[in-house]
Amino acid sequence: ISKESQAEKKSDFAIMNWNEDFRMNPEIIRGEFRGFRGLLVYENPHSSVKLTGEVTDRSSFKSDFTYKYLRGDLNLSFDPSSNTRLNLNVAAGISSGKLPPQKWFDIGGKSFLDPYGNLRGVGYKAFTGDRIFKTVLELEFFERYRFDPSEEFSDWNVFKRCIKITPWIGVGWSDLSKENLTAVENINVPKFTAEDVYTELGIGIGDRFNVVRIDIIRNNMSENTVLLRFNCLR
Image (tube, rainbow, N blue to C red; front, side, top):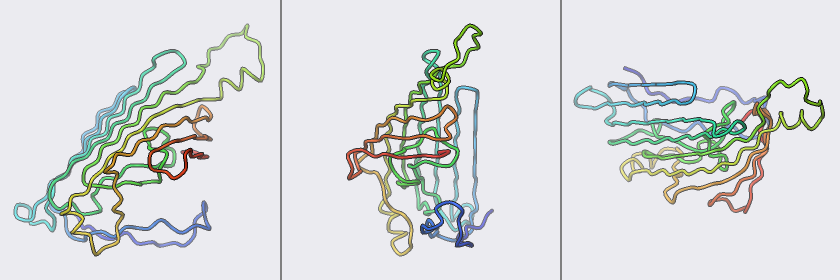
């Protein structure tokens, strides 16, 4: 049993981007959740799978909500060669019933300390929906360090070992049912979906540890032909 309550903004100060407006806290449908929540996680050094889901019902559980949802996230990583790494991220979510907006799925955008598996050509949580699909395939090029006492020390050798180049391609899709759109027509929540399928391709140039990175991106929804993005720890 849990209470679904609204998140309130408590501060008007931020260390980063202090002169910009705070990101909106979307409204929710309040109520008491009674039902089942589940989380299944499998991880090893080269892959991970996560399944999350909820089931609740007004008649069976005396809940204020009636819905079911299931989301799956798959991450795979392997090395095609000694100086490359291929990363694949796939996420999908489905639901039925009146899924409240605080439970909707979202995709898109970079997040702090998480450089992998993101659609980098759109904003954070750019698309929402009660059904989603997203996949990102990226190939990292870098020089693995091997100690060689006979190797000549030079600025070029140091530079090569510090740089990583990452071309990638990403696809995203989301949809909101008429039933769930009607349920939130009088409350302030993001409703932008990627029904026409969002696609992007790009190349990132940065350091080995993803502290600083520059992305050159082309997508099918931007007014600009090419996007240039500077990133720090994202």
